[in-house]
Image 1 (cartoon, rainbow, N blue to C red):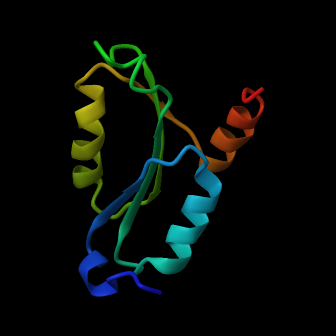
Image 2: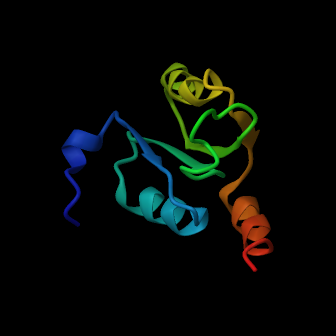
Amino acid sequence: SMLPRPLLAGSLVVDVLSVKQYAKTTMLSNLPAESDILCLHPMFGPASGKNSWHGLPLVYEQTRITDFHRASRFLSLFEDEGCRMVRMSCEQHDELAAGSQF
């Protein structure tokens, strides 16, 4: 693995990919146990969020969190911009998202 494991220990690692389960599994397998993991997916793109994020959904899972204050501060960046915060497992996200792709 090319990951700088010592630098990641004690860090909050956040993924913003549109497919969540693979990212979650990969991070849990490859990041140090001391790394906090937050999986999120802004369910909007540049066009829909151009003028405001108010009411736009941000799906997230606190996958592995030991520093809840730090994770809450990070999530508050989106909440303060008006995102509708949707807490959901990565598995549920992928199942629901797959049903809406076509």
